[in-house]
Length: 587
Image (cartoon, rainbow, N blue to C red; front, side, top):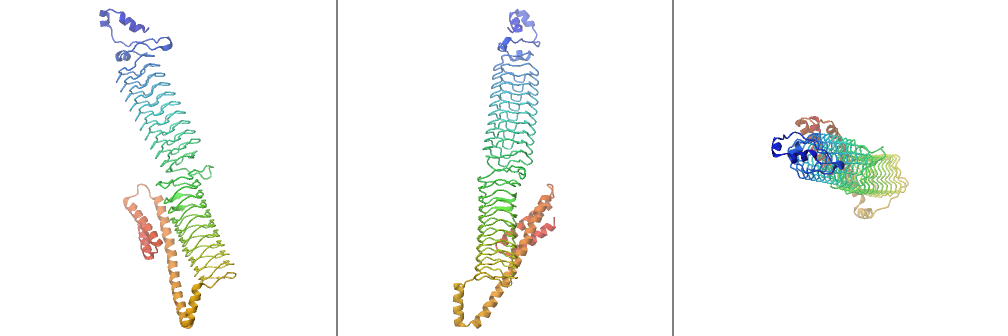
């Protein structure tokens, strides 16, 4: 047993004194039973340390490179700053060992037991750690790049700011790891488990993560750009602020939070599911949520003005006070958009049946071909909006401001339009069958071919309207007119009628002029906004400070002009518009 050491013990003192610390070689016992405990000096002088007993040994700073330490017992040993590069540690036991700043580059630790070891700042690049047990290790800033981790167990490990890029960890278990800022880019982690892991701000870009499990993991602000995620699961995972642009196979079913960027899903047969979530705390939405499922989501006050929501499912969602810009063909059936900021929004062909849009700002909105059947738009602003061919049957449009509305071929069947302002609107071929237009204003409107069959037109103003034909409509004498005519009969109709008509005519002319100015300002402000967006996309990241200042000045003027227009302050709106246009001219 251990023949070299036994022979040394039998030598005479004189002979022992002359013995040199030459490199020795020990022979492992059959079955690899643990041998006698070795000192640091003995370990350093021995090349073959298979099954060696080095439990609790102080081996700090020793050069053990390329040593054969297969199945050696290094439990609790201290190997701080030791050199184990190229060493064979397969099957070795290093549980609770301290390997801080040790060099294990290109070592072979397949199947090694490293449970609860300290590996702070250790070097393991190009190392083989297949099936190694690293559960509970402390390994912040460990270097594991280009290492082999297939089937390794790392559950509960501290891998904060670790470098594991280009590693191969198929089927590895990273459950419950603490790994904020870990560098895992370009790695192969197919089938790896990250259950409950902290991967906040981690880099997993271009990593192969097919069938990986991220259930309950924290991935806030992580980078998964261009990652391969086919079959990966994110149930209960927090994906807030995650960059998944250009990633493939993304399925976030059951996840929480909202990613910063997502690849477009339309046409791929996969729609991102954010249904029923409370997203009011989200500040940075992805630019592209086309075809996403946001049904029943809570988005009150959300700024979605730069988010593409074309063909997204938002039925039943709450968007009170939200800002939208791009939602062409979206499903907003029954959605609540009350007081929403929807100026110049693109909702062509959108489904808005039963939606709540009361007091919403829809100036210059594109609603052509949209379905607004039964929608509530009381008090909404629709000046210069386009509802051509839209379905507005049974919609509540009372008190709307729809001056200069584009509504040719629109269907207003059985709609409520009491006191609606539709002056200067284009309503050629529109259908108003059974609609209520009591006290509405259609002054200067284009009405060629409009159908008013059975419509209630009491007190309807059609002065200066073109081609108005109210045949088949109904009208009743209002109580106000009864009183008026009674009084007028007493004091003399001949005197009051011309005066009343003159005053009414003056008010209508003033109203028409104001409507025309509102229409002009609405169009020009909308155009300014589009020009600003275009410059924002084209402005290079390194643009000079002066250009950036002009762009910001234009944006501020645009916001101020829009607010002034909404508040009816036309002079201020015109002044801010001019200021914004001047700033744009300086770019």
